[in-house]
Length: 439
Image 1 (spheres, helix red, strand yellow):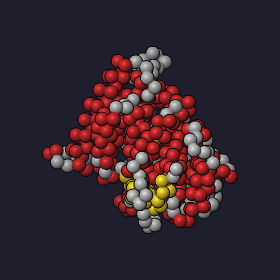
Image 2 (cartoon, helix red, strand yellow):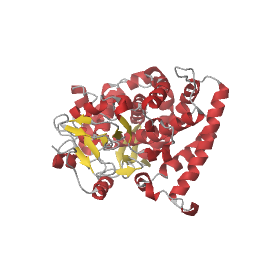
Image 3 (cartoon, one colour):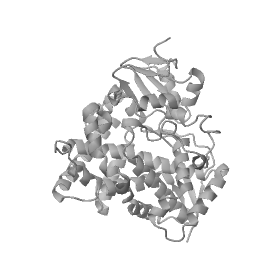
Image 4 (spheres, one colour):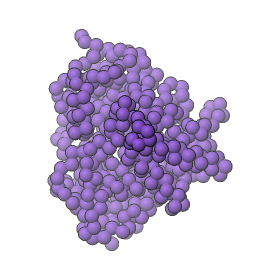
């Protein structure tokens, strides 16, 4: 039996397929080579979208794995939790968990709804809006207020501009090809990224210093400053700064993209029944519902879950490198090989999701899916810490805007998706026309 499962032989051709079709590129590979399948590279990577294989990865001893791409520290910082392993990772994850518990997350609900209302307050009938950009601004302001503890309008605007410039400066080529990360005398795109990064770090260092002096507050930065490990030691300034950057990179863009995909899917003509069912559910709440009541609507939650299933943010996010052999579906994978969960396969399995390309929120009212069948936020010891907050924000923003406006897509041209930094976002930003402002 071969050590590694079969897979494509050309790394370049696989990359081109991914850039052309980031959402649909994985299913044909599983159909052609079987599951699991391998990608060429140094090291090669083995992916699986089978729940049995996903369970084997997510339930393995966490010390089996190490970061596959340590060079991401260029973007995230060397103390970023996603790049740590072993005892360091466990310590930092334990310190960061309390701010993301359910009660803490729900406390930000009113602010999320208020920001959604503020960023759409000037929408008038016949106006064209780009939902992705609006969702970006909402998500960024949520992070600035709930995570950074910044509420002054001028400071929020300055930080938002700096963060957006930084994120938009991470092109797929710079992210995927370390050889292109050259400063070129200060004129290249990577040099521009480094300049913005230095400015952001200076701003974050100032926020951390202020939080240490200010004492307890309700924002996540303040909670991280107060956190202590089992030995009574706090997080260092560098550790806090790198986690703040990770929360922006992993939480801001991904949430905005998911919100934009939800608006796109709901307003496709073939999904009109889903949109009307959701509108009826929201209308039944009355004129001024409590935030918790909005957040608990079952069909709203099903719409968000179906969006995360149908439009996965990455085909195989956060791959890991094996530090010891791993048994995976009949293969003994040696140390040094990369492994990844192919969300781009798992979420399109016919046996789990009949008519997988169809947007059908009802499937989430009809049955429960295991943590190895629906994996939008990863799983195991590396599951996204901000998953509850991202899902909470998605439900509230979607519900708040749909209660206030009727919209239609500016174009019915299908959107295959586009690689934005490391995520699969809408290629055209989801342009919509405001039809009616609801009382």
